[in-house]
Length: 142
Image 1: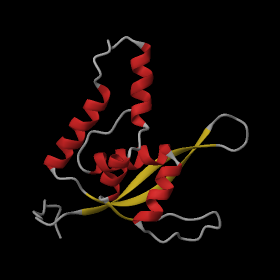
Image 2 (image 1 turned 180 degrees about the horizontal axis):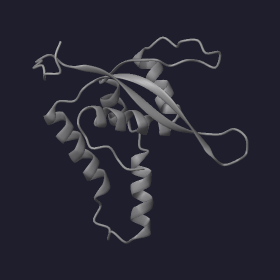
Image 3 (image 1 turned 90 degrees about the vertical axis):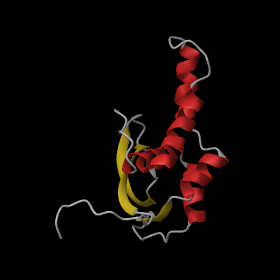
């Protein structure tokens, strides 16, 4: 096999690392990074553009850019997990490598993923950003 680009008209899947900042449970007020690999069905160019436009709409409310209230709303919007956003993301995740506290693999199901994403807005945002990045979006600077 060469490094040539292969034209594939099927929906493509890719395993992609998703990094999540989890609060340390030691009273330090610091975070530790954990990684989960999700298998995504990549977005097409049209889907990617549609998702970008939707994200931009969430951030444009007519408030002046220097208004601190807008900054707060933008921050909160990044941690949104509306039912529509959740469903759109779930349609594009087909597997994971999650483990439980004992280190045992957690079988993948979309319902289990929905429950986990609903519990942790940081994971939802990381999973959403991971799909966008894997599909061709330029990653955000942290």
